[in-house]
Amino acid sequence: MTALTNILRTRTRSALTVSAIAVGVFAVVLISAAGTTGQAQITRTLEEMGINSILVQHESNFAASNLNDEYIATISRVAGVDKAMPLMASINQVKLIDEYVSSFTWGINADAREIISLEPLHGRLITAGDIAGKSMVAVIDEDIAMATYGRSNIIGKSIRVYLSGAEYEFEIVGIAKSGISTLQSALSGLVPNFVYIPISTMQMLTGRNGYDKIAVMIESGLTSAVPTMAGRADGASTDSVIAAINDTIVQSRGENSGMIVSNLLSQKQGLEQVLATITLVLSLIAGISLLVSGLTVMTTMLVSVGERRREIGIKKSIGAKDADIACEFLGESVLLASFGSVFGAGAALGVTALGCHLTGVQFTPQWSPVLLAVLFAIVLGAVFGVYPAIKAARLEPVAALRAN
Image 1 (spheres, rainbow, N blue to C red):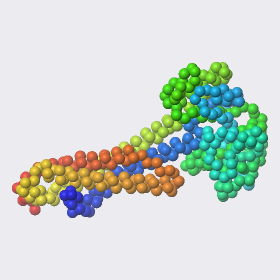
Image 2 (image 1 turned 135 degrees about the horizontal axis):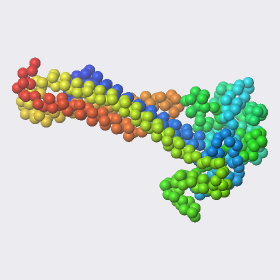
Image 3 (image 1 turned 180 degrees about the horizontal axis):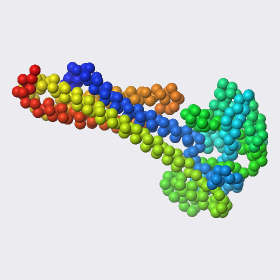
Image 4 (image 1 turned 30 degrees about the vertical axis):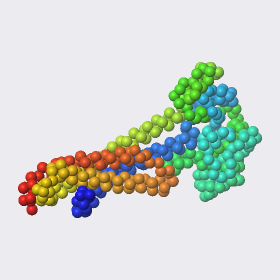
């Protein structure tokens, strides 16, 4: 209570000191919160794109692929595999009204909703009936609809897709919001829009029987256990499932099959590690400002010691011990640092939350870095307050009472 009273006696100086500490903590927490929120958003986006799965493809993206239904059947029998879905892809242009839009056209089947997490906004997605009937129907990204018609719901309209040098007309039966949408906005159009058509239709129009890739969804709840020869033990690891797929392809198709199995999950984890490292480095750089804030606390307390020499002398003359005087000044330092760190952290979280609200990104704070920054600032305030506290405690009562 005494420490708070002394702080309130010099409100302007105390406010400036608290502000200096708040700025330092604000910078650290803002970078940390923005980094963790961005990392979580990118992770969610990549998972929605299907990067949380395994991809089987030819070792050369430009080579003619011989993937077919036999590969899918073979892979589906591997212990630990939940589903396997064929994919075809083509980078091209699509036309709505008189507007040409760059597009990545995907040939998919009815399992796409589960494996690449397509979310229908209007209409429906590709169905098994569309696959069986080789229907001329398409599901498009919301961005394409907005860019051409100025609204998202354009169910029933036509879209012309260029495939293998020819133009084909498809009926739009669904508008989807895929995981790529967030990245499209962030990259300002560098990532093309997506159009989804039945894979059987794409095979028919391109004159191909095979697939470009096979997306594999592994069973949930995998751990580090290794599968046995009799089948997958409880909790086979992702790596062991990948190894089993590789072995199965080699055994059934031969060493020269030219197929590779990519663990997209490990690529995602690598990206997460890079983002975490960048956030940590930026946070450490911002932490330098906290050292400056600590010097501000020391300066403030030294000035306070000089102004209160007579007060210190009176307290000592009536029985106050050196430890009492030291604790009083040290308490003021800690209290100033506490106020500043709490205000700074609160402001940083508020700014991050507001930014997320305005950009439509989910606010995903991690409280451990925030608490660490607050505690570090408080400890720093205590450390830089030790010297002024010792200086105040060592004042001789007689010399202190003679002070003007």
